[in-house]
Image (cartoon, rainbow, N blue to C red; front, side):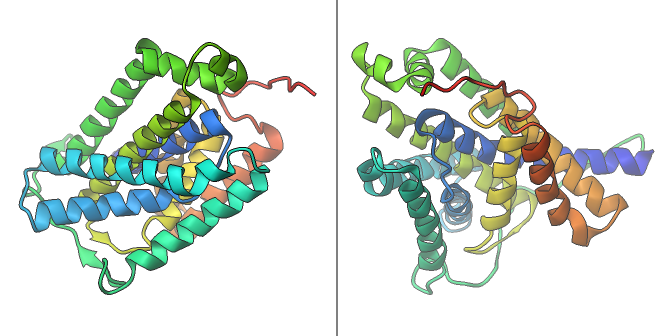
Length: 294
């Protein structure tokens, strides 16, 4: 039982990191109906921002976290303006191919020696690890920080979307772009804000991933990015609480599979979940079938 609880905590740690990435996927899809496959690479770049802010500039952890989020928010807005905005009225397949191309560009550009380099780097720990023993279950200060920061950011996002004028505008654009535009909402501004917020959350996830699993390289965003996408689909893509729920389930299932079945099957189980969800309930756990006008 103690071993099970320990793995549950480890799974929740991974799930909360996935949640911060999945929120970006689900927000962008909810607004522009685009699967931004470059989002996992924004997560990777956020980890590198944290690496340099913590290791080279010796900033305190909170400032490094904010700096990584701002850097990724700017990057996300830039990607949207340069790569996606010109294709806003193009067929969806064009935007999807562009997203895949942007993902590959970010991975291979950042792996150049004069950028980040292709090798793994040891992530700086901003503070020593302290373990707390709770009835045989070990909880580290790193895990507490991951839980606390992730939950705080998710609560702030939920309040922002539900209570602010910009959040209401985002929900209006998600529901009906044409009507929202007729009501005076600047669609381009809302889309840019959505990309910025989603990318900022991915940047925070990158820093948390770095301190929790302290090795990074330019291709580290591929699998977490894909699994966060699966989590968003599992919970109901386009639904913010669904992304959170799906990510937590994904993290726990992945860690439990590695602990009790086989570590070689953890990726297979993750993508097996995607196949099952698409076959049984394509709208996800919290998604509802929607009628489409024709």
